[in-house]
Length: 443
Ligand SMILES: Nc1nc2c(c(=O)[nH]1)N[C@H]1C(S)=C(S)[C@@H](COP(=O)(O)O)O[C@H]1N2
Ligand SMILES: [Mo]
Image: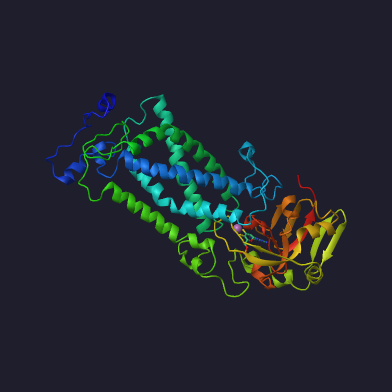
Protein backbone atom coordinates (compact mmCIF):
# COMPACT_ATOMS: atom_id res chain seq x y z
CA UNK A 1 0.00 0.00 0.00
CA UNK A 2 1.54 3.36 -0.98
CA UNK A 3 1.73 6.29 1.41
CA UNK A 4 -1.06 8.31 -0.17
CA UNK A 5 -3.49 5.50 0.03
CA UNK A 6 -2.53 4.81 3.61
CA UNK A 7 -3.33 8.41 4.53
CA UNK A 8 -6.69 8.27 2.77
CA UNK A 9 -7.70 5.21 4.67
CA UNK A 10 -6.63 6.44 8.10
CA UNK A 11 -9.45 6.13 10.59
CA UNK A 12 -11.55 9.27 10.91
CA UNK A 13 -13.24 10.23 14.15
CA UNK A 14 -16.70 8.71 14.04
CA UNK A 15 -19.59 11.17 14.05
CA UNK A 16 -21.26 11.16 17.47
CA UNK A 17 -20.19 7.74 18.68
CA UNK A 18 -23.01 6.02 20.51
CA UNK A 19 -22.58 5.24 24.17
CA UNK A 20 -22.03 1.51 24.01
CA UNK A 21 -23.27 0.98 27.52
CA UNK A 22 -26.86 1.98 26.79
CA UNK A 23 -29.38 -0.82 26.33
CA UNK A 24 -30.45 -1.29 22.70
CA UNK A 25 -33.92 0.24 22.73
CA UNK A 26 -32.55 3.42 24.24
CA UNK A 27 -29.74 3.63 21.72
CA UNK A 28 -32.39 3.64 19.01
CA UNK A 29 -34.51 6.24 20.75
CA UNK A 30 -31.62 8.67 21.03
CA UNK A 31 -31.04 8.92 17.32
CA UNK A 32 -32.94 10.31 14.34
CA UNK A 33 -32.60 9.26 10.68
CA UNK A 34 -30.31 12.28 10.24
CA UNK A 35 -27.90 10.75 12.71
CA UNK A 36 -25.50 8.25 11.10
CA UNK A 37 -25.87 6.08 14.18
CA UNK A 38 -29.54 5.54 13.34
CA UNK A 39 -28.64 3.29 10.41
CA UNK A 40 -27.09 0.15 11.80
CA UNK A 41 -27.24 -2.59 9.17
CA UNK A 42 -23.67 -3.85 8.71
CA UNK A 43 -24.61 -4.85 5.17
CA UNK A 44 -24.50 -1.24 3.97
CA UNK A 45 -21.16 -0.27 2.53
CA UNK A 46 -19.58 1.23 -0.52
CA UNK A 47 -18.84 -2.12 -2.10
CA UNK A 48 -22.36 -3.47 -1.62
CA UNK A 49 -23.68 -0.30 -3.25
CA UNK A 50 -21.07 -0.49 -6.00
CA UNK A 51 -21.93 -4.07 -7.00
CA UNK A 52 -25.64 -3.18 -7.31
CA UNK A 53 -24.74 0.08 -9.06
CA UNK A 54 -22.72 -1.69 -11.74
CA UNK A 55 -25.56 -4.17 -12.36
CA UNK A 56 -27.96 -1.25 -12.73
CA UNK A 57 -25.55 0.61 -14.99
CA UNK A 58 -25.68 -2.26 -17.47
CA UNK A 59 -29.35 -3.11 -16.91
CA UNK A 60 -30.84 0.37 -17.00
CA UNK A 61 -28.79 1.31 -20.06
CA UNK A 62 -30.30 -1.72 -21.80
CA UNK A 63 -33.79 -0.62 -20.69
CA UNK A 64 -33.21 2.89 -22.03
CA UNK A 65 -31.90 1.72 -25.40
CA UNK A 66 -34.61 -0.92 -25.93
CA UNK A 67 -37.20 1.66 -24.82
CA UNK A 68 -36.05 4.16 -27.43
CA UNK A 69 -35.96 1.43 -30.08
CA UNK A 70 -39.46 0.34 -29.19
CA UNK A 71 -40.69 3.86 -29.72
CA UNK A 72 -38.95 4.04 -33.12
CA UNK A 73 -40.71 0.80 -34.09
CA UNK A 74 -44.07 2.59 -33.84
CA UNK A 75 -43.28 4.70 -36.95
CA UNK A 76 -44.14 7.83 -34.96
CA UNK A 77 -42.86 10.15 -37.70
CA UNK A 78 -45.08 8.61 -40.33
CA UNK A 79 -48.52 9.78 -39.26
CA UNK A 80 -50.30 11.36 -36.32
CA UNK A 81 -52.24 8.14 -35.64
CA UNK A 82 -48.95 6.40 -34.78
CA UNK A 83 -47.44 9.13 -32.65
CA UNK A 84 -48.05 8.16 -29.06
CA UNK A 85 -46.10 11.18 -27.72
CA UNK A 86 -47.14 14.19 -29.73
CA UNK A 87 -44.92 17.12 -28.86
CA UNK A 88 -41.82 15.02 -28.33
CA UNK A 89 -39.89 17.62 -30.34
CA UNK A 90 -36.17 17.04 -30.68
CA UNK A 91 -36.31 14.06 -28.32
CA UNK A 92 -37.26 12.15 -31.44
CA UNK A 93 -33.96 13.09 -33.11
CA UNK A 94 -32.81 9.47 -33.30
CA UNK A 95 -35.89 8.04 -35.06
CA UNK A 96 -35.16 5.83 -38.06
CA UNK A 97 -37.03 3.55 -40.42
CA UNK A 98 -37.73 0.38 -38.46
CA UNK A 99 -36.72 -2.66 -40.56
CA UNK A 100 -38.90 -5.69 -41.38
CA UNK A 101 -36.29 -8.26 -40.47
CA UNK A 102 -35.24 -10.33 -38.72
CA UNK A 103 -38.86 -11.18 -37.99
CA UNK A 104 -38.15 -11.60 -34.25
CA UNK A 105 -36.60 -8.13 -33.91
CA UNK A 106 -39.40 -6.46 -31.99
CA UNK A 107 -40.13 -9.64 -30.07
CA UNK A 108 -36.56 -9.70 -28.78
CA UNK A 109 -36.39 -5.96 -28.15
CA UNK A 110 -39.57 -5.79 -26.16
CA UNK A 111 -39.10 -9.13 -24.42
CA UNK A 112 -35.77 -7.79 -23.13
CA UNK A 113 -37.18 -4.39 -22.21
CA UNK A 114 -40.01 -5.73 -20.08
CA UNK A 115 -38.47 -8.94 -18.72
CA UNK A 116 -35.15 -7.34 -17.74
CA UNK A 117 -37.10 -4.45 -16.25
CA UNK A 118 -39.11 -6.82 -14.06
CA UNK A 119 -35.98 -8.75 -13.04
CA UNK A 120 -34.21 -5.53 -12.01
CA UNK A 121 -36.87 -4.55 -9.47
CA UNK A 122 -35.11 -6.27 -6.54
CA UNK A 123 -31.76 -4.79 -7.57
CA UNK A 124 -33.20 -1.29 -7.76
CA UNK A 125 -34.88 -1.62 -4.38
CA UNK A 126 -31.71 -3.00 -2.75
CA UNK A 127 -29.61 -0.22 -4.26
CA UNK A 128 -31.98 2.46 -2.94
CA UNK A 129 -32.04 0.76 0.47
CA UNK A 130 -28.24 0.70 0.57
CA UNK A 131 -27.93 4.48 0.22
CA UNK A 132 -31.03 5.57 2.10
CA UNK A 133 -29.06 7.06 5.04
CA UNK A 134 -27.79 9.70 2.64
CA UNK A 135 -31.33 10.90 2.02
CA UNK A 136 -31.42 12.16 5.61
CA UNK A 137 -27.95 13.68 5.99
CA UNK A 138 -27.79 17.13 7.58
CA UNK A 139 -27.35 19.87 6.63
CA UNK A 140 -29.45 19.03 3.56
CA UNK A 141 -27.32 21.30 1.41
CA UNK A 142 -23.66 21.99 2.08
CA UNK A 143 -22.75 23.99 -1.02
CA UNK A 144 -23.92 24.91 -4.47
CA UNK A 145 -22.27 21.82 -5.91
CA UNK A 146 -23.88 19.68 -3.26
CA UNK A 147 -27.28 21.25 -4.01
CA UNK A 148 -26.89 20.37 -7.69
CA UNK A 149 -25.88 16.85 -6.82
CA UNK A 150 -28.93 16.42 -4.62
CA UNK A 151 -31.28 17.72 -7.31
CA UNK A 152 -29.77 15.30 -9.79
CA UNK A 153 -30.28 12.51 -7.25
CA UNK A 154 -33.91 13.51 -6.87
CA UNK A 155 -34.37 13.22 -10.64
CA UNK A 156 -32.45 9.96 -10.63
CA UNK A 157 -34.34 8.22 -7.85
CA UNK A 158 -37.68 9.80 -8.71
CA UNK A 159 -37.15 9.04 -12.40
CA UNK A 160 -36.22 5.41 -11.76
CA UNK A 161 -39.21 4.81 -9.48
CA UNK A 162 -41.51 6.59 -11.93
CA UNK A 163 -40.31 4.53 -14.90
CA UNK A 164 -40.61 1.23 -13.07
CA UNK A 165 -44.03 2.14 -11.72
CA UNK A 166 -45.52 3.31 -15.02
CA UNK A 167 -44.01 0.34 -16.87
CA UNK A 168 -45.28 -2.20 -14.36
CA UNK A 169 -48.72 -0.61 -14.16
CA UNK A 170 -48.98 -0.67 -17.94
CA UNK A 171 -48.30 -4.38 -18.21
CA UNK A 172 -50.21 -5.42 -15.10
CA UNK A 173 -53.34 -3.29 -15.26
CA UNK A 174 -53.51 -2.76 -18.98
CA UNK A 175 -54.88 0.54 -20.07
CA UNK A 176 -54.92 2.32 -16.71
CA UNK A 177 -53.43 5.24 -18.61
CA UNK A 178 -56.04 6.22 -21.15
CA UNK A 179 -53.76 7.05 -24.04
CA UNK A 180 -51.19 8.71 -21.84
CA UNK A 181 -48.82 5.93 -20.78
CA UNK A 182 -46.52 6.52 -23.74
CA UNK A 183 -45.70 10.22 -23.15
CA UNK A 184 -45.29 9.62 -19.40
CA UNK A 185 -42.93 6.71 -19.90
CA UNK A 186 -41.08 8.39 -22.78
CA UNK A 187 -40.42 11.75 -21.10
CA UNK A 188 -39.78 10.04 -17.78
CA UNK A 189 -37.19 7.87 -19.50
CA UNK A 190 -35.29 10.88 -20.82
CA UNK A 191 -35.33 12.71 -17.48
CA UNK A 192 -34.19 9.59 -15.68
CA UNK A 193 -31.44 8.81 -18.17
CA UNK A 194 -29.99 12.33 -18.12
CA UNK A 195 -29.72 12.14 -14.31
CA UNK A 196 -28.38 8.59 -14.61
CA UNK A 197 -25.55 9.72 -16.91
CA UNK A 198 -24.59 12.54 -14.54
CA UNK A 199 -24.71 10.18 -11.57
CA UNK A 200 -22.62 7.56 -13.37
CA UNK A 201 -20.00 10.14 -14.33
CA UNK A 202 -19.77 11.25 -10.70
CA UNK A 203 -19.82 7.85 -9.04
CA UNK A 204 -18.20 5.42 -11.45
CA UNK A 205 -14.63 6.14 -10.26
CA UNK A 206 -15.71 5.50 -6.69
CA UNK A 207 -17.52 2.30 -7.63
CA UNK A 208 -14.51 1.00 -9.56
CA UNK A 209 -12.22 1.79 -6.62
CA UNK A 210 -14.59 -0.01 -4.28
CA UNK A 211 -14.78 -3.06 -6.51
CA UNK A 212 -11.00 -3.17 -7.06
CA UNK A 213 -9.85 -2.29 -3.57
CA UNK A 214 -10.49 -4.42 -0.55
CA UNK A 215 -12.93 -2.21 1.32
CA UNK A 216 -14.79 -5.33 2.27
CA UNK A 217 -11.73 -6.76 4.00
CA UNK A 218 -11.69 -6.82 7.75
CA UNK A 219 -10.15 -3.84 9.45
CA UNK A 220 -9.84 -1.65 6.37
CA UNK A 221 -11.73 1.56 6.81
CA UNK A 222 -13.63 3.26 4.02
CA UNK A 223 -11.57 5.43 1.74
CA UNK A 224 -14.46 7.64 0.70
CA UNK A 225 -16.34 10.29 2.56
CA UNK A 226 -19.54 9.00 1.01
CA UNK A 227 -19.12 5.57 2.48
CA UNK A 228 -22.65 4.42 3.39
CA UNK A 229 -21.38 1.93 5.99
CA UNK A 230 -22.82 2.62 9.45
CA UNK A 231 -20.46 3.99 12.10
CA UNK A 232 -22.12 1.88 14.78
CA UNK A 233 -23.09 -1.33 13.03
CA UNK A 234 -25.47 -3.83 14.59
CA UNK A 235 -24.21 -7.40 14.89
CA UNK A 236 -24.23 -9.10 11.50
CA UNK A 237 -27.01 -11.55 10.75
CA UNK A 238 -26.00 -12.00 7.12
CA UNK A 239 -22.78 -11.31 5.23
CA UNK A 240 -22.70 -8.74 2.44
CA UNK A 241 -22.14 -11.56 0.04
CA UNK A 242 -25.18 -13.33 1.47
CA UNK A 243 -27.28 -10.19 1.10
CA UNK A 244 -26.20 -9.88 -2.55
CA UNK A 245 -27.15 -13.51 -3.07
CA UNK A 246 -30.64 -12.81 -1.69
CA UNK A 247 -31.05 -9.89 -4.11
CA UNK A 248 -29.80 -12.05 -6.98
CA UNK A 249 -32.17 -14.86 -6.06
CA UNK A 250 -35.03 -12.33 -5.98
CA UNK A 251 -34.12 -11.20 -9.49
CA UNK A 252 -33.95 -14.77 -10.74
CA UNK A 253 -37.36 -15.47 -9.23
CA UNK A 254 -38.83 -12.45 -11.05
CA UNK A 255 -37.17 -13.61 -14.25
CA UNK A 256 -38.36 -17.21 -13.91
CA UNK A 257 -41.96 -16.15 -13.28
CA UNK A 258 -42.22 -13.71 -16.16
CA UNK A 259 -39.90 -14.71 -19.04
CA UNK A 260 -42.22 -17.55 -20.11
CA UNK A 261 -44.80 -15.21 -21.58
CA UNK A 262 -42.46 -14.60 -24.50
CA UNK A 263 -42.93 -18.21 -25.58
CA UNK A 264 -45.75 -20.60 -26.42
CA UNK A 265 -46.85 -23.82 -24.79
CA UNK A 266 -45.61 -25.13 -21.45
CA UNK A 267 -43.12 -22.28 -21.01
CA UNK A 268 -45.91 -19.70 -20.97
CA UNK A 269 -47.49 -21.54 -18.06
CA UNK A 270 -44.41 -20.65 -15.94
CA UNK A 271 -45.16 -16.92 -16.24
CA UNK A 272 -47.26 -16.65 -13.10
CA UNK A 273 -46.67 -13.01 -12.26
CA UNK A 274 -47.73 -11.25 -15.44
CA UNK A 275 -50.70 -11.09 -17.80
CA UNK A 276 -50.42 -13.23 -20.96
CA UNK A 277 -48.71 -15.86 -18.87
CA UNK A 278 -50.44 -18.99 -17.70
CA UNK A 279 -52.53 -21.13 -20.00
CA UNK A 280 -53.08 -20.44 -23.69
CA UNK A 281 -56.62 -19.30 -24.47
CA UNK A 282 -58.14 -22.47 -25.90
CA UNK A 283 -56.65 -25.11 -28.17
CA UNK A 284 -56.18 -25.58 -31.88
CA UNK A 285 -54.97 -23.27 -34.65
CA UNK A 286 -56.42 -20.12 -33.05
CA UNK A 287 -55.40 -21.11 -29.52
CA UNK A 288 -52.72 -18.48 -28.99
CA UNK A 289 -52.69 -15.30 -26.94
CA UNK A 290 -55.37 -12.69 -27.53
CA UNK A 291 -54.79 -9.07 -26.68
CA UNK A 292 -58.34 -7.76 -26.82
CA UNK A 293 -61.29 -9.94 -27.70
CA UNK A 294 -63.84 -8.88 -30.32
CA UNK A 295 -66.36 -8.39 -27.52
CA UNK A 296 -63.97 -6.11 -25.61
CA UNK A 297 -63.34 -4.05 -28.73
CA UNK A 298 -67.09 -3.82 -29.39
CA UNK A 299 -66.79 -5.63 -32.74
CA UNK A 300 -69.93 -7.65 -33.51
CA UNK A 301 -71.08 -10.26 -36.05
CA UNK A 302 -72.95 -7.49 -37.83
CA UNK A 303 -69.61 -5.71 -38.46
CA UNK A 304 -67.74 -8.76 -39.69
CA UNK A 305 -70.39 -11.07 -41.17
CA UNK A 306 -71.77 -11.38 -44.70
CA UNK A 307 -72.03 -7.62 -45.17
CA UNK A 308 -68.33 -7.05 -44.54
CA UNK A 309 -66.10 -5.90 -47.40
CA UNK A 310 -62.63 -4.39 -47.47
CA UNK A 311 -62.32 -0.95 -49.03
CA UNK A 312 -59.00 -0.36 -50.81
CA UNK A 313 -58.29 3.13 -52.05
CA UNK A 314 -55.56 4.83 -54.04
CA UNK A 315 -55.04 6.53 -57.41
CA UNK A 316 -57.07 3.76 -59.06
CA UNK A 317 -60.09 4.85 -57.03
CA UNK A 318 -62.01 2.90 -54.40
CA UNK A 319 -62.40 -0.85 -54.66
CA UNK A 320 -64.58 -3.01 -52.44
CA UNK A 321 -63.43 -6.59 -51.91
CA UNK A 322 -65.53 -9.26 -50.22
CA UNK A 323 -63.76 -12.02 -48.30
CA UNK A 324 -64.46 -14.41 -51.19
CA UNK A 325 -62.82 -12.05 -53.66
CA UNK A 326 -59.83 -11.71 -51.35
CA UNK A 327 -59.62 -15.50 -51.10
CA UNK A 328 -59.70 -15.71 -54.90
CA UNK A 329 -56.53 -13.56 -55.16
CA UNK A 330 -53.03 -15.12 -54.96
CA UNK A 331 -52.55 -16.41 -51.40
CA UNK A 332 -49.20 -16.29 -49.59
CA UNK A 333 -48.01 -17.70 -46.28
CA UNK A 334 -45.61 -16.28 -43.72
CA UNK A 335 -44.49 -17.53 -40.31
CA UNK A 336 -44.54 -14.49 -38.05
CA UNK A 337 -44.87 -13.81 -34.33
CA UNK A 338 -47.08 -11.34 -32.51
CA UNK A 339 -45.01 -9.26 -30.11
CA UNK A 340 -46.75 -6.71 -27.91
CA UNK A 341 -45.23 -3.58 -26.40
CA UNK A 342 -46.19 -5.11 -23.06
CA UNK A 343 -43.46 -7.70 -23.50
CA UNK A 344 -45.47 -10.84 -24.18
CA UNK A 345 -45.22 -12.51 -27.54
CA UNK A 346 -46.17 -15.64 -29.42
CA UNK A 347 -43.83 -17.81 -31.38
CA UNK A 348 -44.27 -17.82 -35.15
CA UNK A 349 -47.78 -18.56 -36.38
CA UNK A 350 -48.50 -19.52 -39.99
CA UNK A 351 -50.50 -16.68 -41.47
CA UNK A 352 -52.06 -16.92 -44.93
CA UNK A 353 -53.69 -14.27 -47.04
CA UNK A 354 -53.10 -11.51 -49.57
CA UNK A 355 -49.82 -9.59 -49.80
CA UNK A 356 -50.09 -5.90 -48.94
CA UNK A 357 -47.99 -5.08 -52.01
CA UNK A 358 -50.56 -6.81 -54.24
CA UNK A 359 -53.32 -4.73 -52.68
CA UNK A 360 -51.18 -1.63 -53.33
CA UNK A 361 -51.01 -2.72 -56.95
CA UNK A 362 -54.82 -2.96 -57.06
CA UNK A 363 -54.92 0.57 -55.68
CA UNK A 364 -52.80 1.77 -58.60
CA UNK A 365 -49.15 1.54 -57.44
CA UNK A 366 -46.30 -0.59 -58.85
CA UNK A 367 -46.13 -3.73 -56.66
CA UNK A 368 -42.34 -3.41 -56.28
CA UNK A 369 -42.55 0.24 -55.20
CA UNK A 370 -45.65 0.52 -53.04
CA UNK A 371 -46.32 3.59 -50.88
CA UNK A 372 -47.27 3.81 -47.19
CA UNK A 373 -50.71 2.72 -46.11
CA UNK A 374 -53.23 3.82 -43.51
CA UNK A 375 -55.00 0.81 -42.02
CA UNK A 376 -58.40 1.24 -40.37
CA UNK A 377 -60.40 -1.32 -38.44
CA UNK A 378 -64.17 -1.61 -38.40
CA UNK A 379 -63.79 -1.19 -34.64
CA UNK A 380 -65.47 2.07 -33.66
CA UNK A 381 -63.68 3.07 -30.46
CA UNK A 382 -60.31 2.44 -28.83
CA UNK A 383 -56.88 3.85 -29.55
CA UNK A 384 -55.45 0.91 -31.53
CA UNK A 385 -57.97 0.70 -34.33
CA UNK A 386 -55.90 2.68 -36.86
CA UNK A 387 -52.23 2.49 -37.78
CA UNK A 388 -49.91 3.74 -40.53
CA UNK A 389 -47.44 1.30 -42.10
CA UNK A 390 -44.33 2.54 -43.88
CA UNK A 391 -43.53 1.69 -47.52
CA UNK A 392 -40.77 -0.76 -46.49
CA UNK A 393 -43.38 -2.69 -44.52
CA UNK A 394 -45.88 -2.72 -47.39
CA UNK A 395 -43.13 -3.83 -49.78
CA UNK A 396 -42.01 -6.85 -47.73
CA UNK A 397 -43.57 -9.95 -49.34
CA UNK A 398 -44.26 -11.36 -45.88
CA UNK A 399 -46.56 -8.46 -44.95
CA UNK A 400 -50.05 -9.84 -45.33
CA UNK A 401 -53.67 -9.04 -45.00
CA UNK A 402 -54.17 -12.40 -43.29
CA UNK A 403 -57.42 -14.32 -43.76
CA UNK A 404 -56.33 -17.59 -42.14
CA UNK A 405 -53.93 -18.70 -39.44
CA UNK A 406 -52.32 -22.10 -38.88
CA UNK A 407 -54.52 -23.65 -41.57
CA UNK A 408 -57.86 -22.35 -40.32
CA UNK A 409 -59.97 -19.21 -40.76
CA UNK A 410 -59.06 -16.46 -38.30
CA UNK A 411 -61.17 -16.64 -35.16
CA UNK A 412 -63.28 -13.58 -34.33
CA UNK A 413 -60.87 -12.71 -31.50
CA UNK A 414 -57.82 -12.87 -33.80
CA UNK A 415 -59.38 -10.48 -36.29
CA UNK A 416 -61.82 -12.32 -38.60
CA UNK A 417 -62.50 -11.59 -41.43
CA UNK A 418 -59.07 -10.04 -42.09
CA UNK A 419 -56.12 -8.70 -40.12
CA UNK A 420 -52.73 -7.19 -40.82
CA UNK A 421 -49.54 -9.07 -40.01
CA UNK A 422 -46.15 -7.39 -40.58
CA UNK A 423 -42.72 -8.91 -39.89
CA UNK A 424 -40.64 -7.49 -36.99
CA UNK A 425 -43.29 -4.89 -36.10
CA UNK A 426 -44.91 -4.19 -32.71
CA UNK A 427 -48.19 -6.06 -32.15
CA UNK A 428 -50.11 -2.81 -32.31
CA UNK A 429 -49.42 -2.62 -36.07
CA UNK A 430 -51.21 -5.92 -36.66
CA UNK A 431 -54.65 -4.36 -36.88
CA UNK A 432 -57.57 -6.77 -36.47
CA UNK A 433 -61.00 -6.61 -38.19
CA UNK A 434 -59.60 -4.44 -41.00
CA UNK A 435 -62.19 -2.41 -42.92
CA UNK A 436 -60.18 0.02 -45.03
CA UNK A 437 -56.71 0.38 -46.57
CA UNK A 438 -55.76 3.80 -47.92
CA UNK A 439 -52.54 3.68 -49.96
CA UNK A 440 -50.46 6.80 -50.52
CA UNK A 441 -47.37 8.70 -49.34
CA UNK A 442 -48.00 9.71 -45.77
CA UNK A 443 -45.06 12.06 -45.17
N1 LIG B 1 -58.63 -3.37 -34.26
C1 LIG B 1 -57.66 -3.63 -33.34
N2 LIG B 1 -56.55 -4.30 -33.72
C2 LIG B 1 -55.57 -4.58 -32.81
C3 LIG B 1 -55.69 -4.13 -31.47
C4 LIG B 1 -56.85 -3.41 -31.10
O1 LIG B 1 -57.02 -3.00 -29.95
N3 LIG B 1 -57.81 -3.19 -32.06
N4 LIG B 1 -54.66 -4.41 -30.59
C5 LIG B 1 -53.34 -4.60 -31.18
C6 LIG B 1 -52.35 -5.03 -30.22
S1 LIG B 1 -51.82 -3.90 -29.08
C7 LIG B 1 -51.78 -6.29 -30.29
S2 LIG B 1 -50.51 -6.71 -29.25
C8 LIG B 1 -52.26 -7.31 -31.25
C9 LIG B 1 -52.56 -8.61 -30.56
O2 LIG B 1 -53.09 -9.57 -31.44
P1 LIG B 1 -53.87 -10.83 -30.92
O3 LIG B 1 -54.99 -10.35 -30.04
O4 LIG B 1 -54.33 -11.61 -32.08
O5 LIG B 1 -52.89 -11.63 -30.10
O6 LIG B 1 -53.40 -6.86 -31.93
C10 LIG B 1 -53.35 -5.54 -32.38
N5 LIG B 1 -54.48 -5.27 -33.23
MO1 LIG C 1 -50.06 -4.71 -27.98
